[in-house]
Each structure stands twice: as C-alpha cells, then as structure tokens.
Length: 329
Ligand SMILES: [Ca+2]
Ligand SMILES: [Ca+2]
Ligand SMILES: [Ca+2]
Image (cartoon, rainbow, N blue to C red; front, side, top):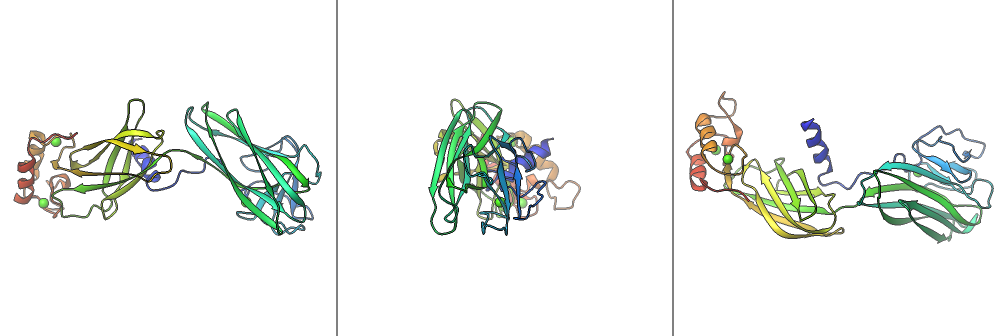
C-alpha cells in the first residue's frame, strides 16, 4: 500500500493534472454509424462511454462524414442539435469524484461551421453554478476552446454540457477536460557534501499553513530540481524539503499562486543516515556498521555513503562529524 501511494504521488510530479472525465473526446463507445457516418442518440443514452445524453437527442459524429465536419481531437465529436435543429438541444453529463471546497477547471471545444450555423452556444454546469459560452462561426469548421472553473461542494460532481443556441443546425462539442486546480511548485535543493548525481533521488516536500497541509514525494532531476503538483489552495505556506540522509529544511512565507511560477530552494545539511531529521548517535551507529563497505558488500548501506563516492570511509565520517548535533527544521 505504501508503495502504491508513493507511485501515485510520483506520477504527479512534473505533470499536469489528469483529466478527471472519462472519454472526454467522445472517441469510445458503441458507435454504429448511419449513412452519414453519424449516430443519433436519444436522451438517456449511455452509448458514449462514460457519458449520459441529457435533455434531448444529439448526433455522435465521426470523421469523415457527409457534412464535412471535423473533430477537434481524434475522429469523433458531438453535434448537440442532432437532426432536429430546434431547441431543446441535446447535451451530455458525467459524474466525477471531487473534493468539496476544491476548485476545478473545465475546458471544452465548442464547434461552429459556417455552412450550418452562424452562432452556437453551450451551457456548462457543475456544483450549482453554470455559464453559457457562445461562438460566431467563420469560414467552415472551427473549434474554440472554452474554459470555466467551479468549486466542488460534494464528493461527487456532475458535469453537464448542454446546447443552448444554434442558428440553425450545428453545435459542436469535443475534447472535454476537467482538471483539479492547485498550484504547481518548482523547487531546487542543494544536497550538501555530495559528489554523486541528484538525478532520480527522492525528496519529500511538505507544505503547510494554518489551515491546509500536504505532503508529496518528488524525484530530482540531474540539477537537483523538482516539480510537484499540489492540491492545497493558493496561499502563503511553509515549504519543507527533506531528502534521505539530509536534514529537512523549511522555508516560511512561500507564496503559492494558481498560475505560478511558484518556487522554493533549500540547502540540506548531510548526515542523517537513519532519516530521523537529526544527526546524532543513531546515525553514528549505522555508520559504524557500514564502515569500510563498498557496494555489494554485506554490510553496505547506501545511506551511509554520505558523499556519494560509492564507499563508506573517512570522507563520510568527516561529514558526519562536522554536522553532528544538527537538527533539521
Ligand atoms: Ca473527439
Ligand atoms: Ca539521524
Ligand atoms: Ca563515501
């Protein structure tokens, strides 16, 4: 379990938030084309994997098709007017797992096509709020990306996108992405008294303020830098960074904004072999056991190779002695 949690945290390091909706590009499902390479779906249909058709029918569009429409992502998208071309238009909904009080960003591509409509509108709604987005058509098929945010009020939230306006016959929808909002933190650590490479080494990053805290694990690059995607709301935080056999360093007053860039750097004293955030007798004990060991030896312990030269010797002992008695933040 602990390994799984670690992997989950690592997978977020340096990456954008994952898309929380399934099949946001409407590529997957039980598509059965008609003669136009479209599929008409009535309200209540669950033929599109992950989604339920709501309010009225829609056309699930595949490319190429008889109307010359294209998708903004992949080969499938939706036309919320179906073949009816009059309100009420169709829409889709999907419920996702959310956390109350946390912000989320919804983005989607709204399609217009000058041959079929002069204006198209879609209302996006979630957690009791909504917004209508409209676009005027220009030459041929066009896709505009719309972005909306909401704050979840529950552990499950239904995202709904419904056509509101068409003049007269096309409302395109594709590429729905729902991401959790949270600051990204870029950090740099100086692993003191170390001649090895920081590449791939793990750091534990904790952020805390009066009301919110979070701990994540990140992997360093060759320059000692890391990125973590945080879930805490924007604010001013104390950021702690700890690496194995280095002491934790806390930096107060780090301002984390949603858009960033947010950065922190820390210089970490070496010598905490047993990872208890102080350089003391426990570290000395482990060091003594591993003294004179090289990789492959039965008493080799990489955490005692403080300077990273692939051996445990007097050079490491000098670091331990110099930092003996130090306590991390
Ligand atoms: Ca698509
Ligand atoms: Ca220690
Ligand atoms: Ca060494």
